Image (cartoon, rainbow over all chains, first blue to last red; front, side, top):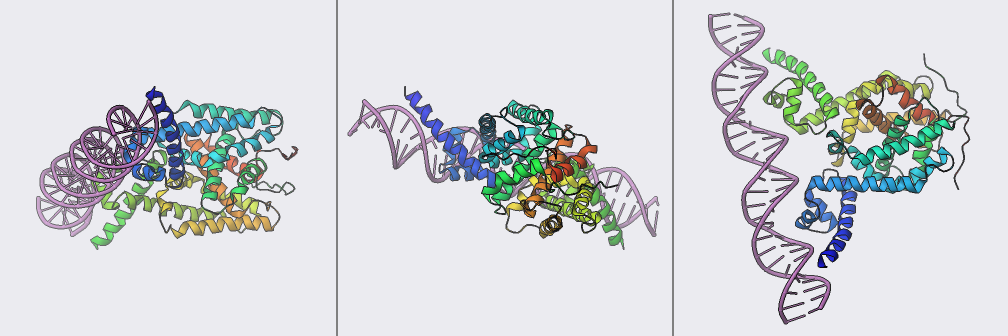
Length: 197
Length: 197
DNA sequence: CGCATCTGAGACATCAATGTCTCATCCTGG
DNA sequence: CCAGGATGAGACATTGATGTCTCAGATGCG
């Protein structure tokens, strides 16, 4: 009874704490538990009541990032229309999570261990499948592997988030920057493509 | 006299320690001073005789990364020939330093403070100038800013280093992967470029 | 109001990494 | 051979973050 109400309230607060932590750690990845607590407007004691420790907090953020990522993948409808358009939709849907993903991307702790969260593998596979579909349909070039295109997308998302974060780029350009570079590259299409000896 | 011999020997050893540390921290960025010392084949005491502390070590690695980067920029001859070819040469020259750069790129400690090493600004400016030259010559599209192309290059270098590191990509493909994606993008050039509403 | 629960503040112990120091040993040039 | 500098091993104190605990006050609800 009161137990149920308890868990409900906790869930709400927990989500708020999680998002505050994500916002802070995105800017300052070395922030201390004190700072995380202050950023969420709670005390360190309460923070520990939600997350057993820093490790648990990071793991929870990882789960949040995976969930948002998979939600973006679902919302983008990767199997619909051309792969090109699907990539555009994917980047647009994933943009709100880009900052969090950039943080997780640099949190090597998550990947140094033996087993990493299976969620990343699922996401990798879905994105790689999208690029593979584009290659099969003839839209994408085949000399760049799906694994590389996937990894490159992560890198560009992180770079884009960082550029916006630092004020050297406008948030409104985020999708355009990433999609255009990823799909079209820096060259103008009529430009001569000279090989180097 | 013996002071001179001293500093000479130290310089050699120091460089060896620095490169060992770079190799280790590239793989495990949270490595402890003990591990760094063991990786270099020296004791922790000797490590401290070379670098006052972890912070000094990271700063030295930063200086090394900047030096290697600027050396690559020099070797690439960014002002010669087409900007396209200059980018190819740049990526080729910078490849050996990519792992170290990826480590420094995620070492937020270096950028969170007030003043960051002016070397990065110099490097940013030189690379951005290259992209700007390519835009002026008509080689590169102008809707992607030089600042973004520069940041994207860093991101792709880090992604490429990570892909090779994890064994999901071959070292021999490094230059090709990065240059082709950065310049040409994922689309085949004759593919239709549809806009999304 | 009275009870239960949650919270904030802070004290406290713990723990890992770090920085410092000493001393025995090794090596090398003279 | 021998003296001086460099090294390795380890003891030791320090430090900063972390995890745990207590207790008083706030909040909410019947």
